[in-house]
Structures are given as C-alpha cells and as structure tokens.
Length: 337
Length: 135
View 1 (cartoon, rainbow over the protein chains, first blue to last red):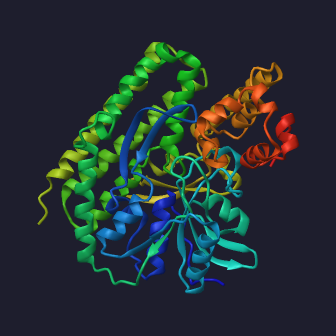
View 2 (view 1 turned 90 degrees about the vertical axis):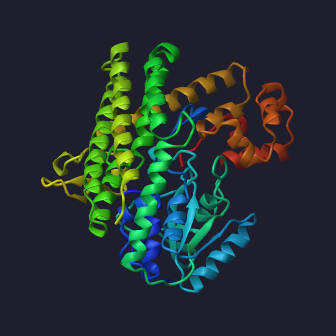
View 3 (view 1 turned 45 degrees about the horizontal axis):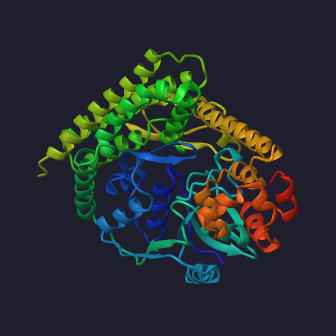
C-alpha cells in the first residue's frame, strides 16, 4: 500500500513534514521558509532550573507541533490530530489512513530511531516524520531531514511512536484533512499574522527567559558559568547550547537563516522594504550565532577558557539580542497596505 | 552565512545524509544548499558523548563498589534520568531511588527485574551482571 507521495528534503523536520503534507493535498506554494515564518517558528527560550541530558534546556525554535498547527490554521486548512493510549489502536488508525491514500505525520522519539546515527540518538521525543505507505512488514518513511526515503519495521515504528519521557509522542498522528485551493491573498494574510505573532513572542512575552530577553539572560548566565560550574561542566553546557542551536540543518545559525529566507519570500508577496532590511538583520544574527558557536567550541575543546573568553561568548549573545530586537521591532511596526 | 561559507566538514549525520542549509549568494538572496556537516557541531556531539562515556564508567565503578545497583549503570548507558526510567518501567520515581540501592535491588522479584530489563532493552541476566551488547 503506497500513497501518492513525493519526498522533499528540508532543513528542519517539522517544516519538512508540514510542506510535504501540504503538497499531498495539492498546496504547492508553501516552501519551507514560508511554513516556518507563517507558523511563527523562530523562538528562544532558556528554561531555568530544568536540566536536559545534564545540561541547560535551551530551544531556538517554537514548541514542537506548533509550526504545523499554526501554518494550517493560518491557511484555513482543517487538521486531524490524534493521540493514542493503545498501541494496536494507533497502528490500526495509521493503516486506515494509508489505505485511504493519506500520508500522515508522526511525532517520534529518536532514541530508538534505528536509521539515525548513534551520535544523534538522545531521548528527544519531538522528531517528526511522514509515513506514506507500507510494504509487507515495513512502513515507508519520509524523514524530511534526509535526502532519501527509508523504511521502519512495524516494531521499530511502534517503538518510536510510543517513546517515553518529556514530550512523549503517545502515538501522535496528524495530517491536513481536506484538499484546498490556497490563493495568494490567503498566503499574504498568513504571512502578516505569522510575522505579528513571531514579533510578539520574541519581544513581548513577560518572562525573563523567553525571546530577546532570554538571549540576554543566557548571556549573563554564560559569563558566570566558569566560576559557578568549573571549566569542565561549563564546557559541557556550551556544547549543549551549540547542539540545540544547530539541531539538524540550520547551518549553525539557530534557525535565523531560515527566518531570513522567509522574510525575502514574504517580500515577493508583500513588497515592503522593512522585510528585506529585517532579513539582512536576521542573516547578521545567524552569522553571530555561528561566531558564538565557534567561540564556544574553542572553550569546550579546551583551546581557550579564561574568564575573558566566557565574557566574549556572553557579549556575542548580547549583540545578537540587540539585532533580533531591532529586526522584530521594525517588523512589528510595519503598516501593511 | 554566504554560500561559500557553508561548512563541508565530516559530520556524524554524513553517514546517513547531507543536510539542507539556507545561505545567501553574492547578491544577498537566500537559497538552499547541501552541507556534509560542521566541525563545530561534530565536536559538540563528541564532547557530549565523552562525558556520557565517563558517566558510564563512573557508574560501573560505583556498582562494583556496591555503592549503587546495576540500575545506575544502565541509566547512564541508556542516557535515562529517573523520570524517563519511571515513564518506561511504570515504577514511581521514589521506588526507583530505593531500587538504586544494591541491598534493595538484590531482593527484587523476577517480575520487577523483567520490567527494568525491558526498560533498558536487555535480558534480566545481563541487567544483573551489567552486560551490554552493542545495538
């Protein structure tokens, strides 16, 4: 059983699942940057006190699941989303979708995701992939971060769909419910609302560890890490920051480049110079995130490690915070025609 | 990031796939290209895994010294904290903390050991003896 499906590789898994599923219902105009921007995907959070893998809990993008949800909502496409307590029920539902010719998105854990290299297999439960068919005992898998499609056995797929721990997927399946014709006007409206929401989340959430404020908070923390944690743990923390920043396919820019690309594509729909200027600022921010990662690597490789080196690292983040603040403030002020 | 700055180092993911990245051309326009990986990221992963190896070795020594039960070793080996073990095994976190004591662990019923064995994806015998097979 194979659904009519074309695999497109993307930089990030949830963007990729979103555009692949939209294509499956005939929506071809939504590119990865558009999905990321309309879904208000750019974010920053440093959750205080929480530890993940013995290090800081940091994310550079919005909460898992939201990009798909918001993008579909903004385009007025109804979505089916189901979670399961029973494994047989979960598989039955999946099989019914495939029989009906519907490829589906699944949230999975990567620890037991057999085709991933061991180095990437942590207990991270918010990876996304598409199941687009079955062949004998195997399911056909389109993992958007990969160049080619792959397969998982029934057992392997069940195990990753029912991974446990934080953000446990609980067999979660989702897909757009019906075919839809999306006009450029709908896209324009979705772009505007996506930008507005993203600016709000980066600038105005009244919590010190979220958005631009969160980047500043991290800068302050980093400057204290050496004294507070000792050089070894401080190095591990910085390595974790870089791993979260990079995930897969963000080119080191912590998703800022994808957002920069989005603003350029937005400009094609809504010619407004602020979009291009802000895109340049996002590129600058991404470049600085990369430089910060290089600085961090110097520390976790043990090549450098004085307090001055930690201060330089923190200062990079302060500079980034200013640039992203400026970009989103101008975006928030755009008077659309 | 400019097109020509896209890193083409040897990354862990490179065994499986190249990654899509977004970068600007000389006119500042964005498009995608493929990257084989970035050394900075690879080293960050290496640092994380070196630390895990050290934690596993330290846990093993603690078990051999009878300061902890084999659960500690397998928790480190499977990168699990108590919350994840609780989610997979169905035991309460406080119960697991008790089971981390060697004297309590030794008295566990086969049924309870089996639950831990499934959690860590090993056999009961291997669980008791800290034996792992690469998978």
